[in-house]
Image (cartoon, rainbow, N blue to C red; front, top):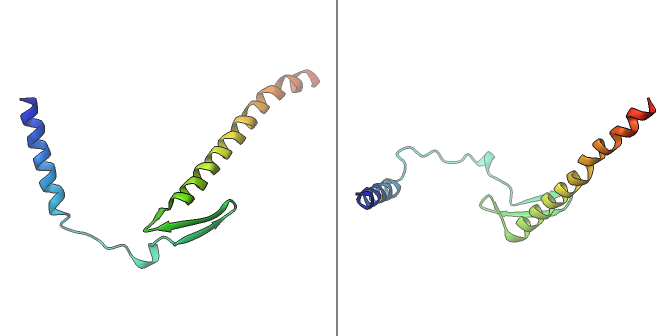
Length: 88
């Protein structure tokens, strides 16, 4: 019974996907994403709104750097707290 229901659902989902949307609004030209963006960590290149592999690597490297800085800075407040309590 379960396999029949899963197969029926798969067929229905495929038919809905193949038909497409009844109303489709084209993307206005002013909203389109640029082909390149200059950032502090290099030039990011996009194709069809998606970054290429080199840009993706730069973005992940930047995220790793930001997380490393946060991992360093977050304990600084808690380690400085005992010093401020004893001096006042």
